[in-house]
Length: 161
Image 1 (cartoon, one colour):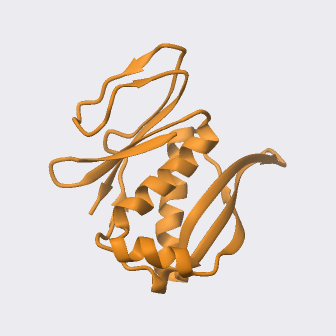
Image 2 (tube, rainbow, N blue to C red; image 1 turned 45 degrees about the horizontal axis):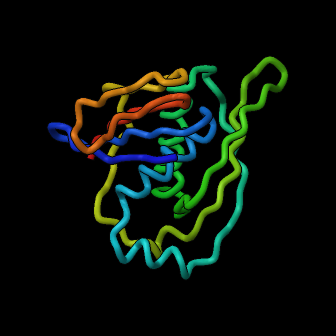
């Protein structure tokens, strides 16, 4: 499963491909974090102790909106709680007619991680979260993104930097 960063006119985006919607969101988190990291930050993660948490977030019952919500939460946790997410696994739960997103998260101390870029916001500009059927192709307008062929799930997200 993969993610590819691509440049837009003034921002940066990622295209992500995975076998399920849940793993697509985890891949999107890794792709976004990869944009932010410096080479020193990549090395620092290897030496940091990992911590584990569970996040419960309200779900909108829409994969694209839930993707944005989780990416925003990752940025918020880094900025406010100094938690740099290194791995996120999503479980979608239904409790008392109110949909919940349960995320199992591994994180390290964000103060130890050097970054090159700052993401100001996750945008909904050109947001896409789709299922590709067997043999169905998605051809990107960005040369950095290869042709992706289903079966699988595909997302495009643009970040304001």
